[in-house]
Image (cartoon, rainbow, N blue to C red; front, side, top):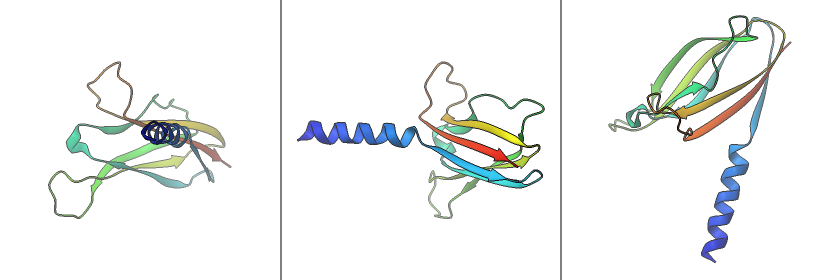
Length: 117
């Protein structure tokens, strides 16, 4: 029975990990992507690949917003503010990792396909 639970949990994490969120905005729109984060662990969200200068979207700001729990070391949310610059579709992959750990797999990834009309 234990093997089935572990396998089910493993398969669920693969399915959850592989999901892509589809978003749609108009050219000129400003929008946010908010991801759960806890910088006290050293982890932070970052793009897997930097955006090109003439990318369909641009990131204007990234900020951490802690939960108002009053507990030291509790998590919060990392909020990316983006702007839809021009029409088209782009696929963004955010990785949750420690920036100084080179060559390591991210603890988590979130993928978004953004269509700008």
